[in-house]
Length: 111
Length: 115
Image (cartoon, rainbow over all chains, first blue to last red):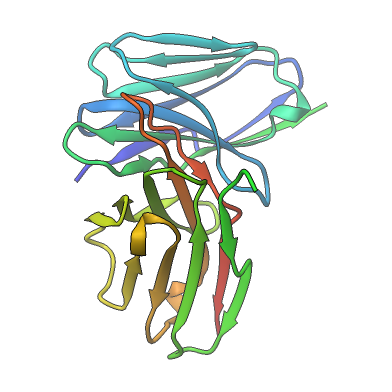
């Protein structure tokens, strides 16, 4: 079945540094979504990417979907302490309806 | 209420007991998902409903787990003969699928502890 791998598992940065997390799927995806989960909270939707090579920006966050629709990345410019949390990618395959989540990247930002 | 609601928020049960969780999705959302999450892991897909029909179920899901969504509204997840390995956060999510938009809204979850 479809597997979604995410790296790194953890990232500790100083406030103001950049951060990137990478997501790879074993199969081609119909779309990929990114979620953020704060400690003690539930996953909150950030964005969905559908098109091959798509790039979307939300303020300091940049999301990319690979040309083969099997990988994606989230880049945060100039991190802030409010960016702390775990970032998950979730892929939907062409043949199913389930959103399959990666294990997430936990981001810690120290001032 | 504008969000996904789950009840109870916490459940402690003895091994071997049955438990049932409820999820009330956002009104008129046609898709409903159940996930399980353990510490340090991503949400693990359990099952999915399109309206009242259960269209997909994880192969990892034991026969002790069953879910229903009568009338395509709220959903219940039952675990029979609970085991300590069932201890986890059980998350429900719903979405209104329009075209390619499949954004999922998660509830706060039910934390199950099996002792």
